[in-house]
Amino acid sequence: MKKWIKIVLIAFSLLSVVWILYIYLKSSPKNAPEIVPSKPILIQTYKGSLSMSLGINESQFKYIDKLPFLNVSRKSITDDYANGVASSLGFSIAPVKIDDTQEGLTYFWKNDNATLFVYTKSSKIRYSSGKSFIAPNKQLSENAVKSTAEKLLIDNKILNPGNFSLGSVQFLKERSLNEGFIKSTKEDFSLYQISVLPKSTDYQIISPVSTESASYIQLTKDGDIYSFQLVVFESTEKAPTEYKLKTYSEIKTSIGNSVLISLGGEETPLKDLPKDFVNNIVVDQVDISYLLDSPTSTSLQPVYKLTGTATLSGGGKTEAILYLPALSGL
Image (cartoon, rainbow, N blue to C red; front, side, top):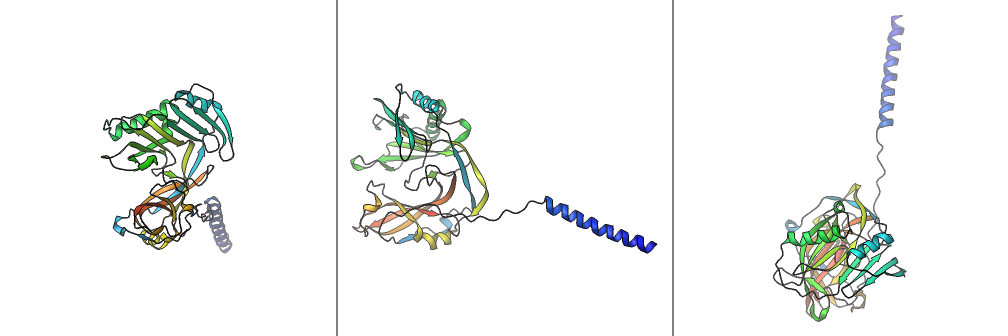
């Protein structure tokens, strides 16, 4: 009898262990299959071959180990929102409505003082004042510039206070022959420019065809609004999965895969340049940005923004900006 009791107790103990193990496995979270991201959409339009090298050493490279994608949702542009922004900015007339093949329904305002575009498909706003950028230098502090930019966004109900942050202030000066603006210094500049960033990231959002931030505000030397461009996001959040980024050595070995975006800010499209126009490019700055690769993208991938010096076939030199996929293995 005792023998049977012992057998029953052993069997009961084994069944208990199996049951506990079953409950544990059933309640444990299952590992999601690893998804390998695809390469970001970057198209090389320069037709010549590019000789590139990394001109900084490893100690000068600020390495970030991992980053997630950035998930975004754009604000739905309604008549009320578009007209409300326009009214706050001083436009009293009704907009011209354009059915654009790329941007969908587009609102357009123009008066003696400024122009305004509001694009519904990409949730983008572009404003340009009609006045000259030339103004007396009031030597504004960075805090004063940020305060003016923040006031513009909040007072005109363009962005909600909790949905954005502001990047560092940059200095721009006019190129020769009225060909736009280029980076400059505090001692020699025409405009302040400040990037507008989503609240959930400290990195700029860029497009595949432009070297400037997707959202920025430009101020004159005396603090007036000169122009701005904004992609209005309803929400932004970091995706749950983080991906390993290229190390210094990986950037060095894959730098030949970089895509040339700009040469000295010239207006001439890269595709129209002669194939032997660029002799070589030496990269001396590596920054991280998030790529908004289409007007309707909802998931933004980190990329490296490479800045360096291009030596041209005629012997001249100019700034070159390139983009390189940042994720290791891409």
